[in-house]
Image (cartoon, rainbow, N blue to C red; front, top):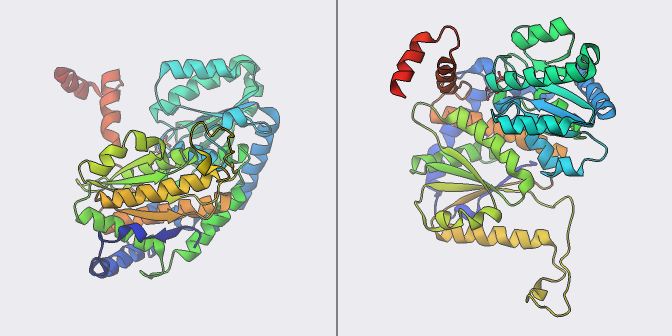
Length: 444
Ligand code: PA5
């Protein structure tokens, strides 16, 4: 298996009896998913997606990406939540968090419509000046406020700058197949359209055009990404507690939850993984946080965050366990130099690879946290490449869905996300929300 589960830092926290007690339930949860018999089973399109995706559309994505790479210096990707995080996560993991500064043969990629900061919107508009710009707007519903505002702005910007006809060739819409405001506008204006399948929820949609188009524009190998996910689909379908690390990971999470841990902290030792951790937070948070249940998904990038959160983890409230994502060999290596004077006393590290120093930090930290009462489970990716990333994405999606069934909730809805939207609409005076507006204003 490309994503390997390692349990050496669990010693003393989970016993063989714990695993025996949960094994059958964990396999049953996984089978509920694979046999499509659980709650929310009309949102399982992502399960077979890596094998059954639309090949014609996939070619269109590759062609659109090539066109954008040819005719644009900057791509604005508009979307929020599941229509944003996956693409950015993969671009930063396979490329770099510094992608926009390093991009040479590919357009810069900026993300908009994932907040309502007027400063950021103005700054992004000024970054567009003097550059050839295209826009990919992504929204399944087509009505989400944040991306709708940003699209209104960037559509007008492109039309003003290029004229309606050329702007039409620079706008790419990723939305529902047959309905919604964005779909209707795209049809009317003749924008190139890509489909978010009905049965794939936002947070499970990174391997649809939602993620694939921006990733392809960045130069990411989307074929290898899909191949990795397809391999994961084959390998992770077995109802085998001992041999299927995805089931075992879901079981470990649930065991810690039962033992009173409140949070899972997804830890990596490379900033290129930080956005992937944001993707994970949405995937697990929106899937599991229901009916007053669920682990809080949190994340940290070490060793950076050891200098902020490290004290709490080591000696604070024992509320969390860690899931360490071990990214294996780095894409580029740096060998530490010798310094004649040894003015900093660091010559004992001369000749070491920086990644080896990082690995010792990881091992030392996991052992320290274990002695401080904080267990860690390790998910190991042998290498960071598109194939392993596709595998990891599918692994986490499956682990999340199985975890949700093990917890006894529906992992595919998100009723809680609506509450803030209703209040915001009411306070903004949207027609139809007058009564709620009065109630809310009385509380302010
Ligand atoms: O996972 C989800 O369903 C959400 O995070 C959505 O992706 C997010 O709210 C954006 O929705 P839409 O794509 O409809 O604009």
